[in-house]
Amino acid sequence: MIKMFRLIENEFIKSYKKLSTIILFVMVFVICIGFTALMFFNVEQEKQWLGDTVIEQPDYDQLISDAELEKYTGYELKIEMFEYMKKHNVMWNWRYEACEEAFSYETSYATDEDGNFTDEKTVVYTYDEATRKEMLSIIEKNDWKAYCQYMIDSYKKMDTPEDLYWEYQYRIDNNIPFPDGFITNEDYKNILITDIADAKEMIAIGTISKEEAEAYKNSVKLGLYRLENNIAVNVADYSTEEMPALNIWVCLTNSPMIISFIGLLVAVLAGSIIANEFSQGTIKFLLINPVKRWKILVSKYITCIVTGYGFILIFYVSTILLSMLFFGTSDIGADYIKIVNNEIVTTSGLGYIFKLFMLKSIDVVVSVTLAFAVSSLTKSSGLATGLSVFSLLSGSAIVQLLATFKQDWGRYLIWSNTDLKAIAEGNSYYPNHSLGFAIIVILVHMLVFGLVAWDGFTKKEV
Image (tube, rainbow, N blue to C red):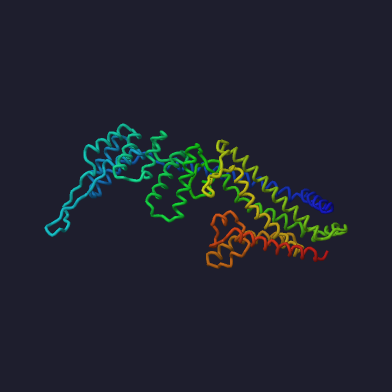
């Protein structure tokens, strides 16, 4: 055991004395700076784009002109509505919806003696004059509470389920007004209220599957939990297709993708650490000592694995520090909140990112093992590194190609199984792809790569 530790120590000393290893460490840090800066630039561009495209008030002159030109059924009443909205400076908010309700109209067609509809039609407002005046008074006073109460009373008169007017009651009870214009990504309370209201409506309607209903119930439970505890940011939102707040977590949740590039850097190191010993003849100095070849191989393998995880740790810490520098620290303490077995589970957001790093680190382990297998078969470090990097780069493309052509046997390739997070979430290229199956495939390939490396290294001529 002592000899093994000495071998590992010797490999570390030799490896870290090389300029190439130092360059790899510098490259990791440079990649981190470039990635963080790029994410910051993208976020700023997105914020600017959203700011430029948000129009708080409709172009009523254009709407009136279009109605006069098209002359569709009821266009006169529509023009009256647009003129009213223009006069009272109605923006894209609850007042716009209230106006549409107040100025809603119905069309009735006359019939002839045989009961057939004729071209003669009558267009009238849906609500009576007293009701319309009440609604318009609420709009002119900009009284959102009165509007909510009006909507609640209307739903109750129709004997509607409470979930369909939950939003209005919740806003009154918690004194949360409607937004002045469009809901922005930063307005988490109004986003949550809207999402909960939509989910409750879908559940109340009852035209969805059991699985969908369960998902909506979880969404309601999680949303209410965040509202009750004033939780503005949930890191879990950044792993979905939704557009959460543009902050530091946009960068941090995307950072694990860089681990694949780190795997390529480690493959360069692993591809040369064996081949160089034979090509430069330094393997003779190692074999002079009474140490079995497999121990030398294992010491080199451990050196590469530890170095790879060192790269990952450097990237993890550097990304956090640089992200805090670029994006600020206001949201760095956010948690990852999800529902597990009908219970709300909260974990540290940074802990969740570290977990993603560890899941993605399988790319580094696979890269090292594959590079060892290739380099043990050749004395050329360039050939060993080239073949290793090529297989790593082409593996994902091959898997996607096989999946596109419905070649199910592609699931048995190691590159179909390295993204454990995607597989666990059911986002694999192949159906019914379980996490247990992926782990078994990885272990089998790793065993094969290890045996190839051991056989090639122990039998290679010096």
